[in-house]
Amino acid sequence: MNFQLPVLPYSKEALEPVIGAGTIDFHYGKHHLAYVNNLNNLIKGTPFENMSLEEIILKSEGAVFNNAAQVWNHTFYFYSFKPGGGGAPKGSLAAAINSQWGSFENFTKEFNAAALSIFGSGWAWLAKESDGKLVILKEGNAGTPLTKGVTPILTFDVWEHAYYLDYQNRRADYLSALWGIIDWHAVSARY
Image (cartoon, helix red, strand yellow):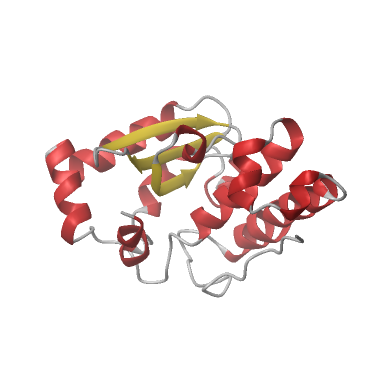
């Protein structure tokens, strides 16, 4: 299987000023593409060559895992946003968040705190356990909830390449701004 860089569902300028066109060019157009290309090169002629991305993540380690997980994580991340997004979730996801954290505001504070506490590069995730309970996970480097048997709902990328052009070292400002572009319809469908 030859993996391709997924087409974004919006233009590179569409998420401004939260995520600038230059960051999309750099983060999606260079980093995400490099993970796709690296993965394709690494799996050529191996048993991974005919597996789905999820199968590769669950069965690999080292460079193959890192590149496969980064392809999957980045696609998940970029498909969580839309121009004019934001607000708060509705329906069953909203009810689950309110039940778990008391309010959407409390949830966003805890989620941002988790993302801020990741040392170095990684991902903050909202995930659903098999019993339906929501959890906030912190994953370093290419970590993904797929390896933990939980259902990913939302992620924020805290690798510096995700925000440095727009926010320099102000990770907290980046995290706060991301809530204004969340595509809650797409995110809620994952719940």
